Length: 325
Image (tube, rainbow, N blue to C red):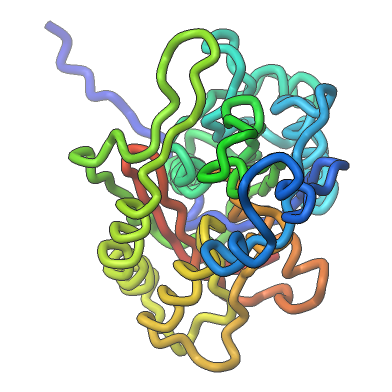
């Protein structure tokens, strides 16, 4: 038996977000349009979940196509060349195939040569899970620069005649590029799961199976169990609610977002992401899509500290503090 000691790589002191990109499908679907095909109305939808419209992808707007579009924008914003990236992670709960995954194809399409690449499915928490894993890979030296994508085509797995889900779920992709830094720009991830409620959100197996959700159970869980996660994310990053410039949780429901912000005691000047109003629930794409919208509008600015939270099927959750590029 050899007594040779295994060596470990050492990475940077921290990781930072270098660029953000987004892709929103071409088709806008308003509440009034949905009311033509199901028993619902603009007032009914907005009073319950706060959604006014959402984007539904066309056949050519696949998970991979949207990932490439969002990833390309993030890469351009970062100022890096494709050959600088050595890790690609695609978070999605709506991939049409189990194998092959989207990550290697997305990397190839973007000209990223032979990166470490994988797909991650943690439901709507997927992007924050992937962001945490990629930041840790940079800190340990397993990667130098990483592309993290959250992409969903939920309309493929949603019954578009069922008002309990069709009014909520939507499509899109968001991405971030991470790189090494002396001054950490991505705080420690706080993640976990409550598997006793694993069936609250599900896509059953079998041909034609569609997404199901116990809406009230998920609402109660999110509004009673996740404030502690957000506080832990701030504590581990060494910041307080007074330091947070932007709050960008998963865009599931406007009522949940506003209640979380109130319970955290965020300051009046804190920018609250409300992308759900125009984009609907885009699962693992919702956090980067929301951040991209805030940066584009000028509501959020470079250098701002943002508190992120993803949560969803599993039931999984993950949160962290990041500094915006």
